Length: 385
Ligand code: T4K
Image 1 (cartoon, rainbow, N blue to C red):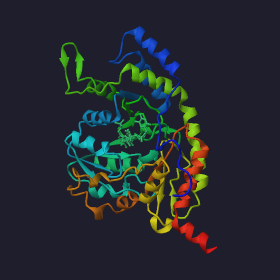
Image 2: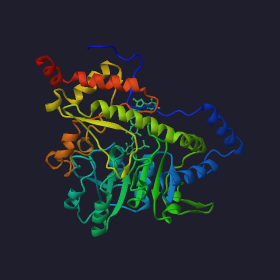
Image 3: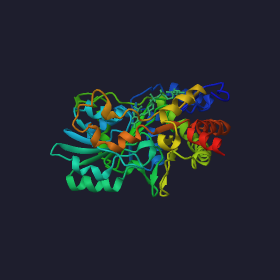
Image 4: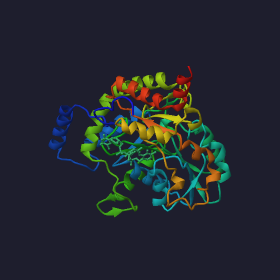
């Protein structure tokens, strides 16, 4: 180990903490209202504010993104098989399993790392009811091709947009694509409510159905009309969300500046690939992920991940291992290694670097210097000079 480790650990992310006084004032209103949950005033206000921010016609808040996504499949009454990506957080396929739906794993695109639309059709069977795309790291899926496939085969489209808060394609909110999209408002997200999530949809008629499903299916005092669940966001979470929204643009700009330093420092390093956003896409600034090609960089992604820890820098191998390699899915006929060659390759290369608004730019530069210093290829060429 050369050089000094950071005195404090640097994590892949840190939650945004707003001014505590602002939260205190907002909680005073909650205390005055005497309403803590069940579609209270803060909840209603946050739903309206998020519709504007996300540029969506309709939104329903939830206590977390996973329960929201489970509910989306209930609302659309889906069953059988759903085609999805193996390169995602465990919640994505687990949500299908919780709905008694079989996840069918489709390989990913070599550049975007999202579900490869050109490979979806070969996986459609008479049991397929939907496609579940994930906008991994906030990069949009090939939404137009997925829409075409869905129309041709009469399938629903659901998007896991957990990483895609504020993403737009040609000025259109990402949550307007497909039948339903799910956003996560977990503490580690760009916008958060500590724990929380939301479903967005164009069909306003879905709102009543989804709101019923997240409240036990209770229609009124005398009628329970659906087998619902408790998916409600409470007033304290909603109050935190409303305050965090005030700081959203500031947090985005800080993350943008950090990403610029990363890009400047790492874009010309042999063996490191950065993920580019198309020019018509407004980015999420949720994660900053690099890909490390061992044959060109000299050391593997795992080595970089391990060596950074020695310097007190805790990066993450999001999303290693592939979902198709989990014990609960690996026996599935679509989890076979030869059918998922790109996902198998990508999952060995990705590394999410620290990204959060109050990460000092000097620290970002130091992290980049450390990464570059690990490259045995560089060291060899230095010695040769
Ligand atoms: N779909 C996708 C594609 C997702 O990525 C996710 C969640 C979901 C669905 C489900 O949405 P939710 O049901 O969660 O709303 C984190 C988050 O827990 C998870 O929400 C997120 N994706 C995933 C990508 O990341 P972990 O296990 O990696 O987080 P954790 O707790 O290790 O936190 C990472 C680092 O952040 C820690 O090392 C330290 C720091 N941290 C974290 C928390 C929670 C803090 O400093 N303070 C904190 O309070 O999953």
